[in-house]
Picture 1: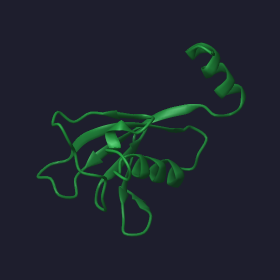
Picture 2: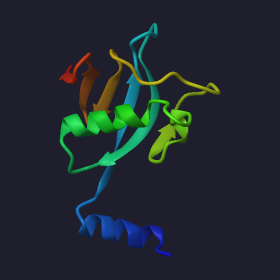
Picture 3: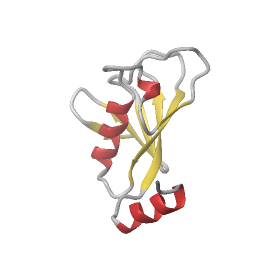
Picture 4: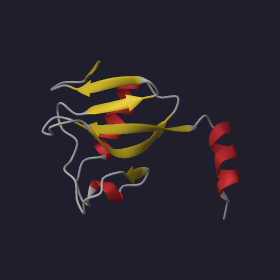
Length: 105
């Protein structure tokens, strides 16, 4: 069974480095709030990173905060899924979820 260092080295070798992005809910809240840190493929496009974060923070078969690669950051027992109007922070750039796709803000 590989350890974390071995897995990290293999992922780097295979071009599968990961990075964390922030999911910020703002569509229905009085003020924006960080709800999750989501692991995405570092080499993916911005659009793919946003889409990956969106999918991982939506409840489909299990509550989204139990999805692999998701670190919940909300204090309550539950949290709504990501919706149009919410944001993803990648590094220092913020992207808003639109009806179709993402826009940089």
